[in-house]
Image (tube, rainbow, N blue to C red; front, side, top):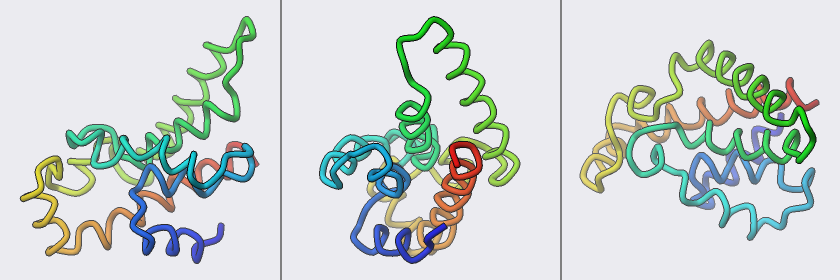
Length: 140
C-alpha cells in the first residue's frame, strides 16, 4: 500500500470514494479525471450519512474487477461484495458513514463540526486505508 499516494489524494481535496477509486485507476485504464468524476457523488455517505464513501469506492473497484455479462456474474459479484463487507465491518465496525464518524455529515453545519473535531482528518483516512487493504487482498 502506498500511504503517501493516499495522503496526496486527500491533500488534493478528494473525498473517500474518490481516493479509493483513484488509488486503482491505472489498473483499469481510467484517467484521474474520469475516476474522480465517477466517484465524486458518493462522498459523505451518499450525502446522507449512509454507506461510507470508502465502501462505495471499493464497490466501484469490485465492479471494475469482477463485473461482467457472464451467466454467473451476479452470484460472483454478490460473493465479492459480501466478502468485502465482512472484512470492512471487522476493521471499522460498520459500513455506515454516520456510525463511523459519530455524526451525520450530510449538512454543511455537521460537516464543519466533524472537521473542527478532526473526525474527518483522523477517521476517514483509517476507513480509506482499511478499504484499500481489503481490496489489495481481494484483487491482488
